Length: 336
Ligand code: HMG
Ligand code: MG
Image: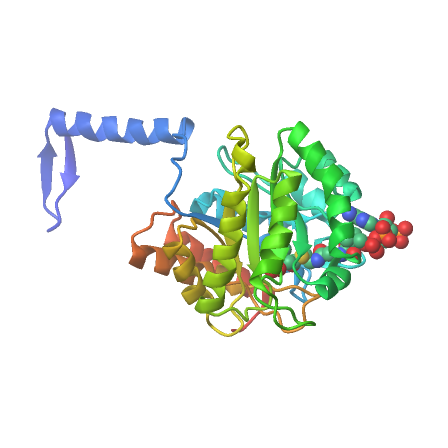
């Protein structure tokens, strides 16, 4: 027999049954720690992009160990997909020059995807050498942004991506194709939904698994978001490959920056259209160094609150996401 403390401080004798139950429960906890259950797919997938989109635009370059801790904390919070870094020119994006080291040191969790950005074959080879199993090729709906961001035209970017996507598919590596400036361009202004659907179709034809439609500078409105997403979804579904049911249509993701505070409304209309994957960044850090005016990504904390209001599960622990956001803000010494 053992004793237990009651709320009023009195001691009582615990029955052998209660003791056995409590021991069984603690054994169950130990078993769960030793043999974690596979994560069940959530109703909405949140892709945490703070280690990549967040940190690429911060003046302060964080040490590798802080980046790795950020990724590990996000994994522990339950994110099933964490965009961790980019294999781009270290001269153009010095904040992510340590990509290989970050990849080598992060703690990979079962069932979690850790994609990295690759702009060309050189980036792909560096990424694979570093152990990447998921990649993002990133194009643009705007010619000027394509030139400023990746130093080539839209058509040239597809020529660069084609061998990358082919190699990745042959190696069983997950590929996302991003369309930047889908809701407006910092250089050209308005971008037509048909142009976004056209570039999305080019990525689809290369064979990407997922399309990410990105409001790079946060100028989207709910009305424009609906028009763009409907055009993309119609294109993707029409192209469900001329009756070739063996090739599945890519899933569609929404990537919103929150420059004018409309990202949550834009995600809301995407939910209405059936889109079930969104990028977000803890504490809303981030932006693109080659898109003047691009402020942070939509804050993960706000997206989690939206999903809770709308009744969508995400598998993410909101308290842990919030404390990770507070912690990274302190690390960046950003006062928002
Ligand atoms: P380039 O200047 O056309 O390339 O760069 P190049 O082939 O002329 O090479 C120039 C130098 O870069 C050479 O080195 C290459 O070896 C090197 P040098 O001979 O001068 O010593 N190089 C590379 N080094 C490392 N990794 C590579 C690589 N490729 C070439 N992969 C490139 C082309 C795309 C590489 C360059 O323009 C670049 O790195 N741009 C940065 C793109 C970027 O990271 N942008 C931000 C991310 S996109 C984004 O934020 C939008 C997103 O969030 C969605 C949204 O919100 O819209 C995804
Ligand atoms: Mg972005």
